[in-house]
Length: 255
Image (tube, rainbow, N blue to C red; front, side, top):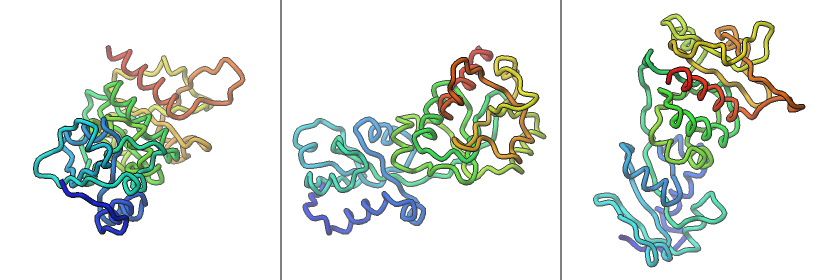
């Protein structure tokens, strides 16, 4: 374990830079914070390149530090500058981005996020997809950054369990439709059917849209529209909540 006391240390500067999307994209690395997230990362198939812990954490907390991976013990004040959270738990990991391309399995259902903007919503969708047994999450261009600290944190450990593909466009979705997948878009439309009447037992892709504007026109044209009843005066459901309702209906039907 290497001690670091200075904010001007090159490793510290590098890790701090990963808070920025541009730096993450350039170096193809990102960070996760917290005991559970770091443990989940270390036990997954992701490549962890470094672990940083605050002095107070290394002195007072028990943690199984990995062999063969650099571990840095960092002064508390320096460590706090590395973190996105207001009350850091004292440990973080640096992880290489991994290619997540995968083939869709007709025995499973999937969820597609069309320009979802809020990283908390995106993380919630990933977490719920894991819980509901989805085969994976598909993201359009313009979605919130998959590797944002807020996305990773909202997804909890599911970030390391769930297959996610980015930059999936309408043309690719059309190919999936042509291969036998039905796209069910959560949208109020003239021909929308109650979501409980959709047949999620067949190869299915659930589509949720942008928080403010819903599903884009080019994607909507590929979808069978389904609606979730709203009994009160709310105009709509949160995107993450709507996704959860539809995914658990798919799970219910498949169970």
